[in-house]
Amino acid sequence: MQKNDTNDKLKDMKPLYIIFVLVLLCSILFFLIFEPQYDKEVFVNILMPSGKELTLKQSETIDQITKGLSHEKTLSDYDGMIFVFNQPQTVNFWMKDMNFPLDILYLDENKVVVEIFSQVQPCQVGSPENCPKLKSQNSNIKYVIEIPSGSYSQYQIEVGKKITW
Image 1 (cartoon, rainbow, N blue to C red):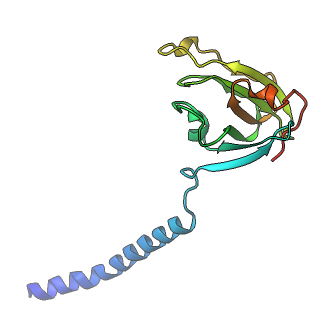
Image 2: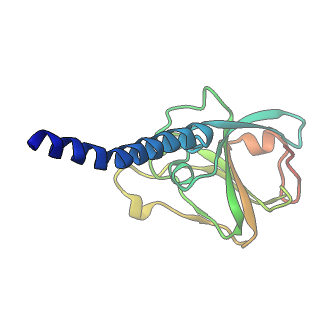
Image 3: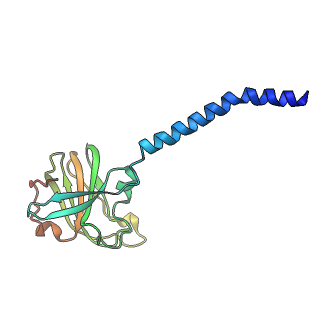
């Protein structure tokens, strides 16, 4: 009598196992097809007004934008970073946890430079409250480019000039 009860229970659970396996397979297939993009490094080649082409690491996700170039020792593998926002907005950047100075360019949705912050120094270690914030004067910032300090003049970047990619 007990053996039949066990067999009946197993037969009753068979549809649940099938559903579980199907859901598991569908989940695996979904993640294989729609692999998350937030862990992938994307690089963009941009053309500066001087004609020099730079390779910039692209940041789009909130985590990537928040981290930026913080904690990087050098820019040996690429020339800087470009931050891409979903829509034009007022932006606020700072140099917390940075190891080297930067030139920071704010661009509008047409990729035209609207503000330049040159030779921005890293914040003092242990004093984030004293770290200056570089708030944009414009509310139409769509892109921010960070390049090594002193580069903006070398690449003939000026307010009103367009950067292409």
